[in-house]
Amino acid sequence: MKYRPSVMFGKCLRLDHLYDPSHDTHAAMGHYWWFWLPYYYNNGGSIRKGSACVEHSFKWLCFYLNVYFWRVSP
Image (cartoon, rainbow, N blue to C red; front, side, top):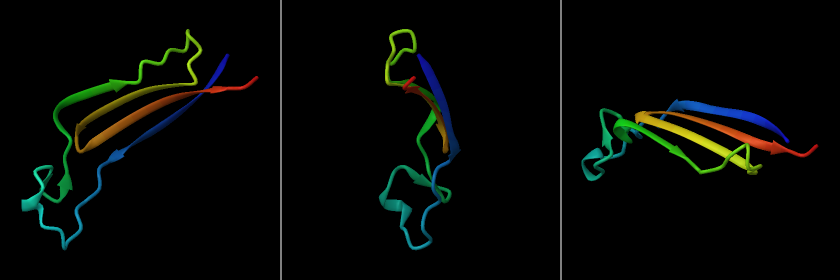
């Protein structure tokens, strides 16, 4: 089976200038924040098992990196 990789990375959204961050505990210094410690997630998919999608995600502070492997039909 063949897989096609796709990668997404970036920084979380900035807050709107009209937004009041005092009402949201995840909003500070103009950004939304996720995790102070690095966070890793995968969906349990495996290329060896022939899963349709294998996902690996990494989040830290306001940054993210997602790597996907999509099964391609022959």
